[in-house]
Image 1 (spheres, one colour):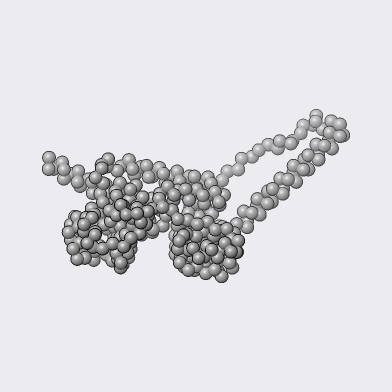
Image 2: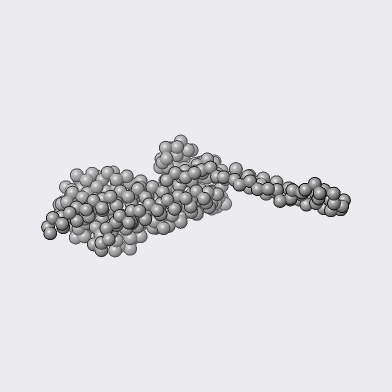
Amino acid sequence: MGINKKLKIKNQNDPLRCSSSEASNSKFKNNSFYILIFIFCTLNILTCSKSKKETTLKRIISLVPSVTEIIYVLGKDSLLVGNTVYCDYPEAAKSVYKVGDFSNPSMEKILRRKPSIVFATLPEQKNIVEQLKKYKIQVFTTKPKSVDSILNEIMEIGKLLDAKSEANSLVTALKNKLTEIAIKNPNIIDSPKVYVEISATPIMTIGNLSYINDLIRYAGAKNVFGDVEREYLVTNSEELIKRNPDVILIIHPSVTKAQVKKRLGWSQIIAVKKGRVYDELNPDYFFRPGPRFIYAVQDLANIVHSLWAKRSNTSQISK
């Protein structure tokens, strides 16, 4: 997923260069010609100076780990003057000035860095966004609901940071990978049902308004709570036993798959019976709607492909 950060600048001939024969024109024409050169060069100098100044003065603060990752992939990390303690990827992001944590960034620290633009997310950072607007600081808010919206935001950020070419290359690479994964997906109607647990106390999962729901779909499966018009929801053992998922993903550190298997009544669930409970997946791939979402899709797709390969083999044996 690397992107070539060296932009090539094409040399162009000076459109106002004149030949030796043209130098013998009348004095009036010569004077007019030199006046035009002077005006043209002056405008170019002013325009270039303004453009250079604007680029130099662009100072970014990212309050969103996924956006921090996007900024680095686009090669614009030199503009980053602040982020949060949760912005820990790539490794270099850890050494950037910290303005606080994700939920409660310090307004004082943000203002101290004199940013020209701050990246934030809603609704978690609504209060800080309102404060920033009072100080007339430009704010870019992110809240993707699907894979398409993640890709669109990458393009928007690229445009904002003068990295349209890099953003386009990144989005193209991600789309190509999604297509590659989709081609390998079994062409079946009865897709495996996946339960994604994001909290143990209370037991929480995702509905069809979460972009994670879309990640599951791209992996060739379906969210067992995909009929619920919510982003996140609290559920219980009784409801989950009734829905009987084929696969269980634990993407939080509170419990292990061994503990999940021992929950009262969960031994009835087919995912537990068949040993398809997974707790080793990287939560950041799922929770951060940035470039690494593709790894979440790939990891889940590998599970789905493995599951259907076993089903196919069983079916052939039975024949």
